[in-house]
Length: 395
Image (cartoon, rainbow, N blue to C red; front, side, top):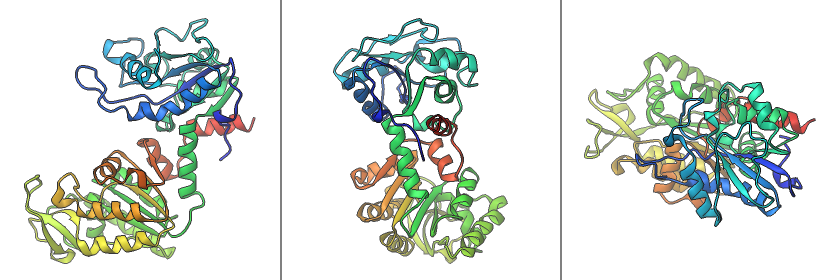
């Protein structure tokens, strides 16, 4: 994938606008509860500052109403935390779109207020995009998590800025995803789990055409078990998608790939932290059972497959890992991935939570902080923000 990279440019004294993803969670008082996204954005900012650029950073935060900046929508808490991490004051600039000169001095940085307050941001308004583009000499998109959206600061500005390029975080995400799916080391094993097939149907269908083994887990696995003729009791299932699950299995089988179905499961009669876990053969699930994890034999089979993989893509825990008695399947997979010599790529909020719980963060090749963009890339969709960077790189 050919894109211009910020790290390859001379940025001395140039006005550099970085679109970051600083959409951090906050508590009721506005205090930041997790600064992961801020920390992930530091690389681009520090590099631009070190090169003597006049750095402007912007991001969305929450879901503000266009044209109205409420105190709760302000990036001031982000600026405060960013300043702590950078060891300098980071001023916040409001009403910046039509500012004749908002860029700071060389080697300095400002934070441009919540970009989604600007009228026309979400609709990728051309006029707004041109006005923002006029504020910079170099536009840097370092917000992969928003790359599936065509908005003014993710797409429009890239069309009209003198130079448009990818920041280090964006470039790393693209490189990791391309390596995992574009020309992967084989066997390629993908783990896709979640509560509903419907939310990941296109991903499953797309991956069935690419992978050597497609592992389904969580509520998704229940639908596939039903498609295989197994009892699932009162487990979460989408019966209207059972035929689609069969088609996905047939599609994989036609290529010589497989969609392994659990041979044993861990069940309970209630969904609760105090629920009693019982291991059963998949064929023995009772009418009042809820399947909440894969069993030890199924986990062992997956661990064996993962030990032989050349590439592993992981999106979603295979059980209700928040309850320890239903977390053994996810734990076994996490530990197998950590020990694997394969290129390992993981993404998705629940996946990242599982990675943190089982302490394997440092053992994976790459962890994507993106949500929707990560999933759409897995689907094989063209992401607008990446597409425009490619187009600008080609001239």
